[in-house]
Length: 514
Image 1 (spheres, rainbow, N blue to C red):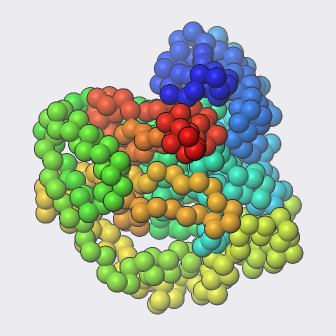
Image 2 (spheres, rainbow, N blue to C red):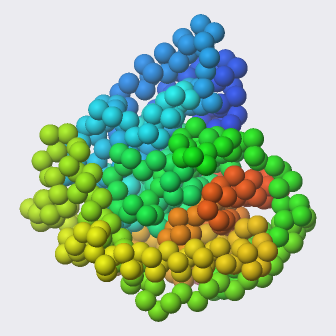
Image 3 (cartoon, helix red, strand yellow):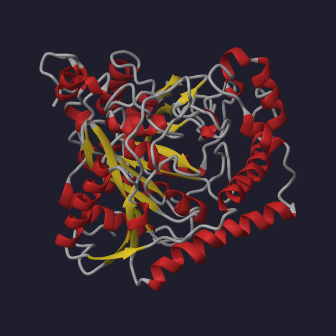
């Protein structure tokens, strides 16, 4: 617990409407118990108090100037007795690499895209609007979705500065969907949307103590999203609860495998299931391992059979080939995307962006370089034999020789592991310096398979989650298994807004000379 003489928790804790989880808000809005206008205003006021001042989380890059008008229009629709959608009046924050036709640019956090005002909605945004969601604003992110430098700082962008972790403000919020993870944890919206290529939904969710879901690649359209990888990119929901994530996914999914993910949730989903425990992905942190053991014990109590599994030994060239795939796909997909942006965007290729960053090095390259951009620019096109061979190699290693094989050979329904480490400090000197990384998120990311993280506890004020990973298009099953665990464990922590770990009395006492 925080010291009672500090103003942190009383000043910044969510209360009233903003403290409620998405499903409860959605029901109250549809019933007319609360208005979309009142809820939208409550979130705007909270963003002003907690994100723009107070602890200054810097999680929100821009607010939609039309959000209040959209909320009033939805209230009028309900009053007129017209049909309303699944997310009627629910304010959502969207990562700022996803296009919306609102009066907000889509920047990827870069000054080069400050004028990227789109007149189109990404299909996932159009789908959310069709279900009554309000696009409240855009969230800050690791610039270019953390694919600019090998020495980057997660959660930093030239436009938005450094996103702060609300559990401990000097700790890494993780990237690249840092703003979306922080906004969900700090109750700045009913739900948020992140994007992931490799860990960028799961990591900010686990270190901020919320639920994050990376769907099967293709279930949510990638169209009109600033891209990295055509084979790995996907958007996904970040929320306080698994049911909230299922609601959002039901609204935003457009792929052929789409179903009603809320209807598929079952509190008894673990009963009789065989769960594969990735023992070699536990990591070496004893506190994470202890929380993981507690989570496994909860699953056994709910009727699951646990099966210890050793993960595949990745071929020696796996990581280099995986990086090669991303370099090729980034150059090709970014050039294709930039060619479709408005004429106000004058930087139309990756080469142009590299030149812009060099010319604006004082702001854009203030903290780290653009080595990944330069490596990608040196690559050829997607017809290259080098690219095709690398893509097929890494997909085979993670699919038929990875997740698929583990599921079939061990006759298990899903794989579980810790979702990642405890967040280190933000470090502008060394860049990101992460401890030993537990989990198997990269395997799910490269395979393009569903991955859910659910909070499993905290240590010294810092959260960590447990991962549920499944096969292609097993999104509903994975959400349901995670839901059953969540309902039993109830481990989501509320942010305490500590400045540093030394705000904890036991740490302060130990750190100071007696």
